[in-house]
Picture (cartoon, one colour):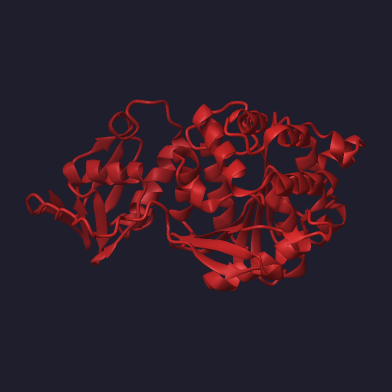
Length: 398
């Protein structure tokens, strides 16, 4: 069935939404919410009914409901002030107030021929030359203000899309922002045939990715080991960075703050024992320390991502670099508004490191999440808190 309203067409057979003839990318829950409202146009849809049909009766926070409503309004070309399509009925629920016309069942999709290309299973990715000539995989998704995400250097953006948890986190950002992500393929030679991790070169990569995405001035979102390149870029190019968000970051590497040799790092020993083993045990043990609250599927997916993206030698070089890093001198040089996000019970990089970041960066804000997971994941209570705070910070007046 096709439902026509305002300048939109929602096709519940093909699970598509178009506006002014152009396709609109929406998350499954956002689509389900719009579908629920369209089927009951002109009638009140209570919050209880939304929770029952969109979230299948699960416990869900008010911030998650509000974020879904905001995304639905944006998808249909509406907003919370105008409410020309989706109207809020105070303390009760929502009502779709635009006139809806049902035009019958959609024509069946043609069967693909044997020679027809298969649909892509990951977003479109292109490659550019990074600093030192190493290739960089770049993907840009969504619409809205420009946002460039900087992950740990070994994180593979293509493999990320094969895991619902990591994909959902990316899609949630792409709902509100023009999101650019990238993966550096390989690292330079340190002169003794070992890979060399150069954070200044990785900061150069950020500029190259931004140029490729068409971003002149943009927000930076760095996660975990991505902080080191993001900080250096923000300090070197203050005119290009509008805002900085740091999740799971730290000022000093584990070896520096513990006073131990980098070779004694427990994570490094795990990598040395069998990083590319056919069994997933090593990688899973590695990631369990970062995500002790799970879910298990997300842990295994992260392990496969990292183990499949770099060699053992490259991962050891990365461990040595992050264990020895010191960002102290960079912090007072950051000039953009900054939000620090950190798990209260993070066992890998403790909350004290986030407090040092917030104290060292002028006027930075600290958001503490009530979790032990190093990074917030969809489906966990901390995710809704994070996403609401992220959007509030991004939308705040400069």
